[in-house]
Figure 1 (cartoon, rainbow, N blue to C red):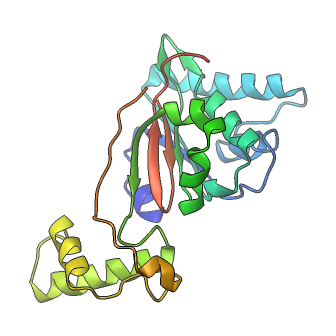
Figure 2 (spheres, one colour):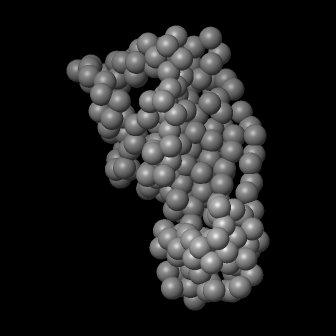
Length: 216
């Protein structure tokens, strides 16, 4: 997460939501707070109007707006639907808000539920860390091993070949952080990119970019 935030382009204005143990309606309040938008005293419609006005004000200035929601696996189906509806905020058929949803492996299982079909159809790209299983401690171990390999080889950069060598050497990465049953599964490393329908969704185990096509 910090890696992403440290490398955002100057024309990108981002807000990060960390507390996802909230209802669908409660989710809007921290979004306004992180974007420093004064919260109107009226209804939910007034809140959405304030957010839309904020986005429209930035659009002609070519200022892109990114909403990052961490721990997405904690969001209820209703809250995820609220996130999907935010992708309907647009001007001249252009998305005003990009959304990145970050979460643990449970997020993937939740998005595979048939009730999440409309949400999943908005996904433009996703990434799943197969070697680590999306477990934060395992991700750290993989990164640490990659740095050691890179140092030993005097590599100028760490690339996918380095990660493949770590997996081939059977270092047991992830076994210390995951149940024994999970360590027996070693699926091949892959990087699925699935163009679909611009909102973005991110997860510790996977990230997905949602692209808006029409209001549904």
